[in-house]
Image (cartoon, rainbow, N blue to C red):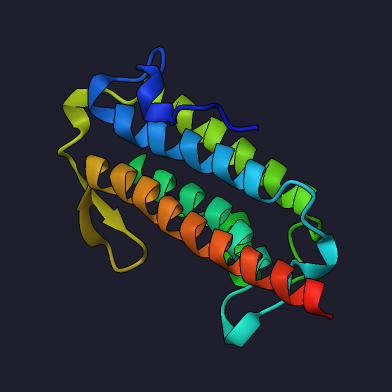
Length: 173
């Protein structure tokens, strides 16, 4: 269960550079909220798309995938075949884990990898250029890391709303 205060209110995360504390706080907050909100969420509702919205399964897959991809670009690396396969499978129930538990574990593991990367990031490189994707769209290390955190929180909000709608519709049936 989530603690009474939000992660950012609990103080600095050990070994994370000061400039990257907000990124770490957001990722840990996202993990806590997802685990709390999807506690006992039924697997059979994972791929429901109320009003054509993205499913909870898509959001869970996308949360892990986008965090992996953005942090890869922050390391000045290109995506590997497994990352492209994950991207292709986002939103498809038959790919990459089909239970809530499996998808929650994958996201939790991805947050841990992100935290390790944050610990190893030299603050001196934060303004360094990083190209995004095959087109090499311009960004910076800090831009990518912050985007990873804000994009994660955006999808957490969408996931929470979708899960609430799906659960309420299921109760009506």
